[in-house]
Amino acid sequence: MDFCDNSSSNNGIHPIKCALNDDATLSTQQSSSSNWSLPSIDIAHAFDDSLVTGVHTDIFSEYEVLPNIIGTGNYGTVRECRSKSTGKVYAVKTIDKSKIGRFDHLQREIELLQMVNHDGIMQLVDCFEDSDYVHLVTEKYSGGELFDKIIDNTTSSGCLSEKEASRIIKSLLESVSYLHKNGIVHRDIKPENILFESNEEGASVKLIDFGLSKMHLRGEAPMSSTVGTAYYMPPEVIKGCYDKACDIWSIGVVTYIILSGYPPFNGANDNDIYNSIVQGNLHFPTEVWDNLSNDAREFVCKLICRDTSIRATPEEALQHPWIVRNQ
Image: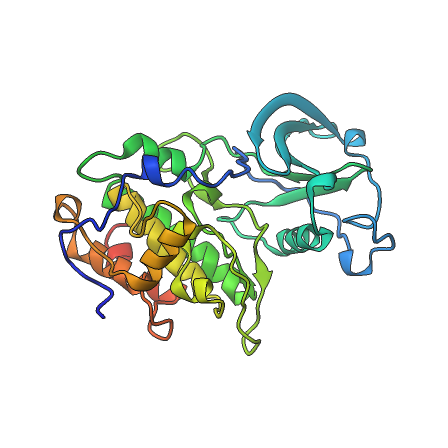
């Protein structure tokens, strides 16, 4: 079955406003780079296994945590905080430990955030833990989520311009290339996890939320956990046998959405979406896609490709004409 179908049928697709509100995301609307050096937390050798980080530390000794909530999620809240030594404002994600089923998942997230250092990825600045909470201090960005920008710009003829879309996707590909070269698979790339640094035109974007991320090195057995958000999962994740190429499929879905305003695969519930992904063709309804370039359509097909052996790598995608010509 040809997975890249140019049919005008929308295959039951609905606008993103109706389709993508199934997942509560902890949104850290965060702005500006940090020059802080993060103290190393050796979680692998933590001396108290009742703690996430292994030691109690006091966030209030170093930061003033401001009362206004700028994000909420299943495990806690995000507020602004101000460094007592520099006066710089950051975001602090406060996680309620009583709501965490397994500490090792949060430990893994912190370990991975400590590892990464890339302009397109949210920077962890500090980490604290008390009896009830873990506090993750990060850069603060003020531009909001890509998800909200899609909602605000979707019309019957499409969403973002190809130039703006390619700029965002280029940054995302560069971030994922960095992660993959360092053996990290994100596993939850979606518009809710992409933030703009500011509200200015052309503001840079940041990839956030490493709660589902995992180290996976070349030669290791395939991953099998079905994790992520249904709309963005490739067939191999649904089937439980996958590798880092799963992130590329997700970027392809994000590209499709920011160009058209709706997801390529849809359904009334997760199972319907999974069936659509595994069984369905990739459609390009004419009312939107006739307004877009052939390069854009070809680029999407290179990423939303069922055969992982020919699915584009981040480096190959960055060299595609749709990316190169729109910069």
